[in-house]
Image 1 (cartoon, helix red, strand yellow):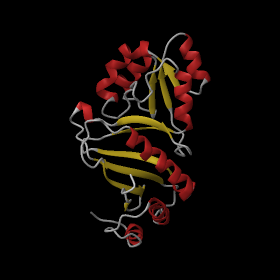
Image 2 (spheres, helix red, strand yellow):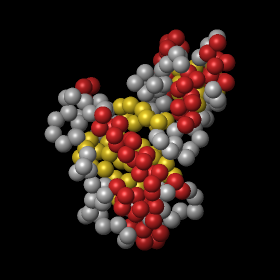
Image 3 (cartoon, helix red, strand yellow):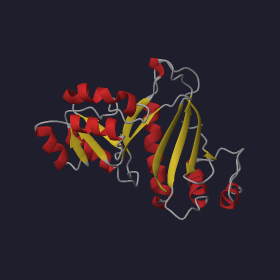
Image 4 (tube, rainbow, N blue to C red):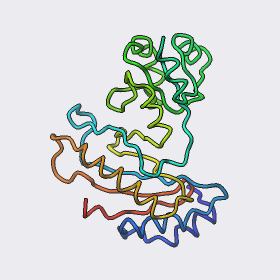
Length: 229
């Protein structure tokens, strides 16, 4: 795979055989982010679980202490009084069947998170095949199926992120922007990894956190020592 000169120069700063402590890793990620835009810093955590088993799923949501640095567009499925409640809380789109049809017929996806009241899940369920693969399907576990839509919207706008395993048992999550600086990014990192540790399934055996890598959007990966976790 071809890598540009900037990437190659950044990669020289990092020893791939070393697992750095969090503070040092964060410093290297920031130093190696050389793009002209404010890169997102992502965390990739490989877990010692098997996501094919229902009792070894790891999924949840957390409000990062310093947010994500990204304004997220929220779509809410609601009716009656909940429509006004969602609009007042700052939802970008609110509706019912007309939004289902817009998504299915127009392939419309101008939103980042979907929230639904429980009484709307009969309608939202029809979108399972299109929202599911994109990770947009609302769920009670992530706090996106709730009668309290106002609180859900406010948390999402404040920097709530969802974490879940992919098919290779890895969690991929944004933890902020390079411009946050190392301290704020580290606070977000500790909050997220703490939540993942709390979510450890009882059925998980052996080493739970197998590896952890930090990287900016365009930068190389930096391995983080997981010994203390």
